[in-house]
Amino acid sequence: MSIPATDNSATVPPTRRSTSVPRRSGAVFVAAGIFLSRILGLVRTHFLTGALGQSIAADAWVYASRIPNFLNNLFGEGSLSASFIPVYASLVRDGNEEEAGRTAGAVAAILGLIVAVGVALGVLFAGPITSVIASGLNEPGREATRALTIRLTRILFPSAGLVVMCAWCLGVLNSHRRFFMSYAVQGLSNIVLIIALLIFRHSPDLAHIVTMVAWASVVGAALMFLVQLPRVLSLVKRLRISLGRGHEPTRAVIRNAIPAFVGRGVNQISAFIDLWIASYLPSTLAGLLGYSQNLYMLPVSLFGMSISAAELAEMSHVHGSAGDEAYTATLRARLDTGLRRIAFFVVPSAMAFFALGGVVVALIFEGGRFGRSQSQLTWSIVAGSGVGLLAATMGRLYSSTYYVLRDTKTPLKYAAIRVTLTTILGWLLAIWVPRWFHINPKWGAAGLTASAGMAAWVEFTLLRRTMNKRIGRTGVAAAFTTKLWFAAAVSAAVGWGVKLLLPFHQPIFAGAIIVAVYGAAYFALTAAFRIPESRQLFKRARSLL
Image 1 (tube, rainbow, N blue to C red):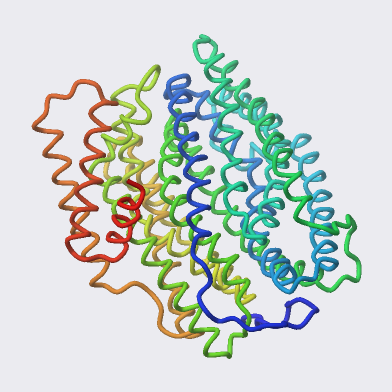
Image 2 (image 1 turned 90 degrees about the vertical axis):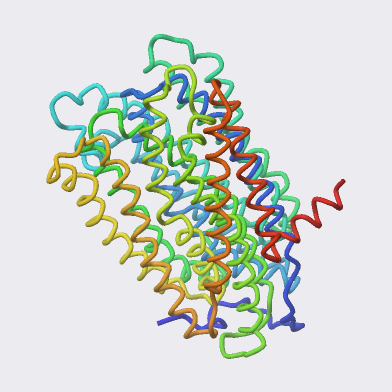
């Protein structure tokens, strides 16, 4: 059952009513910040792959960076976006600085206390935690990977705790419609990691390289928090640090947070299941899974997260309730517009993963200890990720809309179904199918990513169907997506033609040319099909010239 939109609203009644579609520049600023951070992330990954290649050090880095990340997954951006932003943004909207300051201070205090305990327990019990989550590392012959994973996990737990506090800063900044800084600042961590890799990447001791990178991650997370804090303090005029006992807006945040935390917990279980299954794949494949995830997350972050984060904040500033037709019409308009924009950018991303993944992987990753054979295997993993790319990104926007309606239970329920399917399909496609059909076990990594994509489509379908019952018909027209897929397929064929006809020898130069041709062909075809999103981009580009 969903929570009514008025249950957890601010204590001050609305003084005005606005059901017009708010400004849409928020997603642009979020995308710009994420783009800057992700580009730096790809540069970091390029140096990381060159330094570690396909090795047990790369495996240990993937395991260790994922295990402490449960703090951020449970208490970080996703949970705060669902629970804190709708309540705090409504207080900001109504000009109630006193209540907004008390709410922000209480959330910061509670979050800080939880993070401190979580980091301490994580550092103390890193060994047992690793043994449970990555149980495949307990098998004979994996001792070195397990020992290095435990060492890195202990180092990275404080980094994860600082990232959670950065999520509190993001919640405040987004509520005040300061979108760019909270996402762009994430690039600071990547800059610190790049500097560390430039210094240590030529060391013959891969364990030493990855240990220095882990310490650099802690420094980067601290810088992220310290850079945002002054701006946050300037926005929260009457910040009061307390545990918020008896404070109604804080209790509203907690009420919203409980199912959100459970929902994020379900997602975290999914991430741990992926690690658990990956630990039973052949040694050194986990590192390639980690590299491919960095590439997969680029369109998810740029188009799924940016649009969803901006729309969550903007929708939260709109007055109304779920039974108000004008209010639901505004939500439908924002939701449908956001879905079209996501599809416009994500469809060609998925097609690039399928058809040009080898070119893209070579462009970004090849060099140093990462060669042609690693590129081909990573391509298969990236192609598997493309299966559910569109569903996963559009599903984020649907979840944000549920959060605006103060309903965190429905996304939780469907996330649980997705996790169950991912577990069954992941174990089947990654482990058992290769055994049954005598396929090289290394290809099981692609089965693992494809299984997550299949489950994402089921979750997306359920989210859309239930939302349609709540606010009316939503979604992207089939004719629209068909044009996008056709344009992407033709553009991929053009890209392959360039690859076959021209004698490229350098993968970076070849990849840059082919990707540029692919992108230009896609935008030209969608403009010819009179896709509004493409024509708007051309107008913006022309205005900048």
